[in-house]
Length: 308
Ligand SMILES: NC(=O)c1ccc[n+]([C@@H]2O[C@H](COP(=O)([O-])OP(=O)(O)OC[C@H]3O[C@@H](n4cnc5c(N)ncnc54)[C@H](OP(=O)(O)O)[C@@H]3O)[C@@H](O)[C@H]2O)c1
Image (cartoon, rainbow, N blue to C red; front, side, top):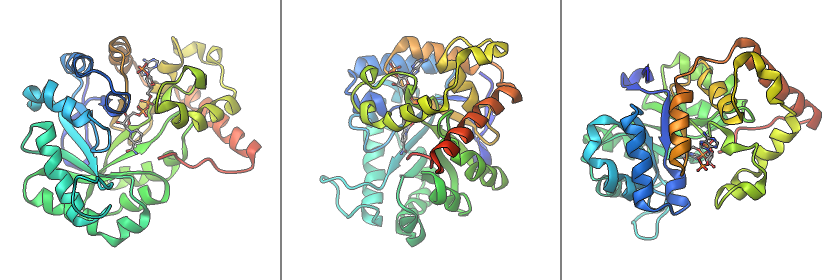
């Protein structure tokens, strides 16, 4: 898999990464999580994304792939309150304690990237949480720091000198960041990770969604129906299914370096590796998807913000 320069971090990352939320939040067995992550690493995927709040996910990574630590860029997130850690949400004390706990859980002596996990614009402006991450970076516990978030807060973060990486939502039904955050990220040479890159499989009915996705995917499912896209409109692209159209749309956006698909299914993980090697969508196909989004927003009479 051809790697991309990850903004001013200078790291090289594969266009496909792994989002480890569902292996934690859907309580996937550690052996199964390990099977998926090892097969992705075997295929050359080199970025793994987790968070303190993806219950059991950091531990599963530590248990199953920490022996291969030099093969991947490791990203985690922090800042939310945990009863077993000192300090209030987004305080310097809590952020520092969460970094230290992540190192233990992930069985490593450094994270490549630590992000503030979707805090508000006010928290970003206050600066305590980011300041604690900068201290962790200066102490060698974290190589680069950044923000996971969207919309106005994401655009603000993209202009902070300490923020080298942003994780943000971009997909066929979530396009707000394409016109706001991504151009700023390109200008400021920020490493961009895309979360929810295949729109939480929004083409599935809510009955077919599992666990956390049942609620989480509702708005995307609604938008997907409102946009009225049809696979047969993309015949020229030789698209096999919705997952392929969704992934190739996201990977094709200027400024995007890696897309972290979450999966609990080894077959989907293998398929995503193949899809990541395919060419960018044509400008015409991208325009069809962008036009459908714009039309559906207009029909509803309101802008659709990026979902965090
Ligand atoms: N605030 C934040 O910082 C934040 C928020 C959201 C997400 N994230 C990060 O971004 C990652 C990705 O987002 P996400 O997991 O919400 O959504 P996503 O990657 O857009 O979609 C995941 C869904 O797609 C399905 N899927 C995966 N590959 C598929 C394929 N080839 N064909 C059909 N279905 C496929 C998965 O089901 P199967 O398990 O059946 O494959 C899962 O239900 C998360 O895991 C997390 O690391 C961060």
